[in-house]
Image (spheres, rainbow, N blue to C red):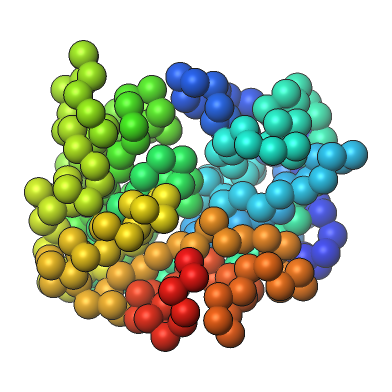
Amino acid sequence: MQRNPYLPLPMKLVKNFTETSDKLIHTFTLQFLSEEDEKSFPYMPGQFAEVCVFGKGEAPFGIASSPTEPGFLKFSVAKVGVVSTALHLMEEGTIVGVRGPLGNYYPVEEMKGKNIVIIGGGFAFTTLRALATYILDPRHRGDYGNLMVIYGARNPGLLLYKDELAEWEKRSDIDLVCTIDRPVEGWNGRTGFIPAVTKEVSPSSENAVAIVCGPPVMIKFTLPVLEECGFKPEQIIMSLENRMKCGIGMCGRCNVGNKYVCKDGPVFTKAELNQLPNEY
């Protein structure tokens, strides 16, 4: 049974890991306190949750872990406000509240049998990491075709999940393309902005789905490239994570046209978004 979305679930912070060289993004591993609590929190890649720091408030964050990784949840959080700052300063062992899971998720069932192209920029790679991890799990990998992941950041120090990226590079069942904006000494990967690199690798649209998440400007210039590659609006899936607010559609601050991103999203196809005002 899914939890009451109004009630936070107590979870223990078991790891507070600094992801980036500027120390502004940390990944938090939260442990369920019991098997019953874990069973009451069924989630899928693409969903998010409200993380509550008692006495400070709560904020929405995409879930970076995959349901194929039992026992815990992961959130990668940038230090930008009261709640995120409190999280960054939090000691391991502290109890926090987690309200969710909230929103919809990437259509993993509909994507079966298709080639998958994942495109992410900056710290918006969180739920995309969850999706890639889900697909790469031995229980699911055979359900999908080729997997290409295009991921970029301003510089190497701002790439998330570096150890996992290194492991993905060794695998034969994933085509990983990492890029940084400008050349840096010691960097041997690609250089260039996500839209330009996507155009260079030119992913095939045949029997494929492209999932895009990142800064709005990245999305804006990547979508035309995908269209040039032959992707139709119904083949492009986007996550409007930057519009998430209360998570249950009560505050009304997440609406785009007649849709509430917190309830109807944050995952939409480009075809769905084409029917809405260009407010995202």
